[in-house]
Amino acid sequence: AEVVTGQGFEALMRARIFEPLGMARATYFPDEAILHAVAVGHLKSTTGEGVDVASPWPIPRRSGPAGAISTNVDELLRFARMHLQDGELDGTRVISAESARAMRSFEVYADAFRTWGLGWSRREVGGELLIEHNGATNGFTARLTTIPARGFALAILTNHNSGVAAHTKISESALSRWFGIEETSHEF
Image (cartoon, rainbow, N blue to C red; front, side, top):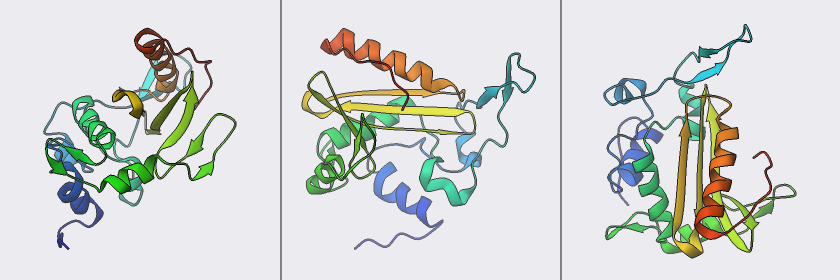
């Protein structure tokens, strides 16, 4: 097995995921992210008018695996494409096909609308199985929706803590326009 040295978890992610996928901008560290065009997170203003800049920009390093990656939509879609192609992208095997399929497979019930695989939420809408992941940290929100049976991925990144409302509407519109899938809005 390959030995990865350096900054622990982050070095492992760079060596095993980011580099093989050509995700040169993906990082966990603000001093690396600042070398590229980056956004700052925003929150509803404490005065009730406008927005405030979220501070601090990074989340604590101990929380990095839960959501500290800084990247862009293009790189996030490369990650999605690798998963949709059962762990391989552009001839490079990143994870085993068995692992990719296992991550999308049912593991546990989550709520009335979703089940969970390994790291992916799962829901059926209009007869299609959607495999998704979303999250929010310090004024940023993200949503990655895939339809494996159709080879489809939609990545949405916002820099406001209320971005989930935009995610829901954008996702609903895209699914309706491109696939005729109609869904009822509910929070994720």
